[in-house]
Image (cartoon, rainbow, N blue to C red; front, side, top):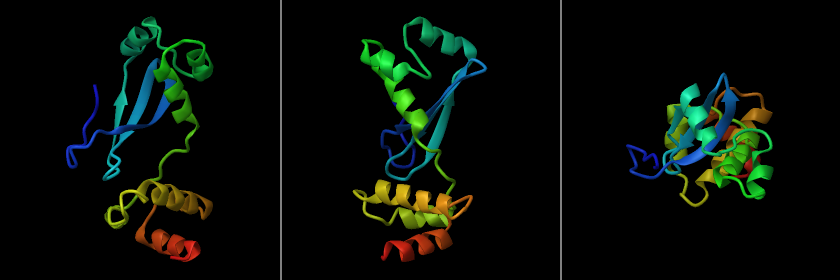
Length: 137
């Protein structure tokens, strides 16, 4: 099973997964083309069903996966370590979409990191201009 972006018809990729909390798991998927995000939330029964199949989720999952467990559990552990994505204004996303595909993910990560360091709550066109000046572009 995979999620497709309705706008781009592109397979979405797992951006991050939050470990079980109150029996539920949250998985956030992002379109690599337009950066649209969706979240999938499991209920406690679904989480229990997945766990009963031997899928290990949460801290230490990567080590258990390396020892022969489910490879998906390692991916979830890796995603927990990534910083959360910042919200972007519609104008900033439109501007980001004009950046060539092959460098867009790196540009997005760099701009978000810059915004965090400067104490911004979201990425706007002004933040993009500031980052551009710092990056020398």
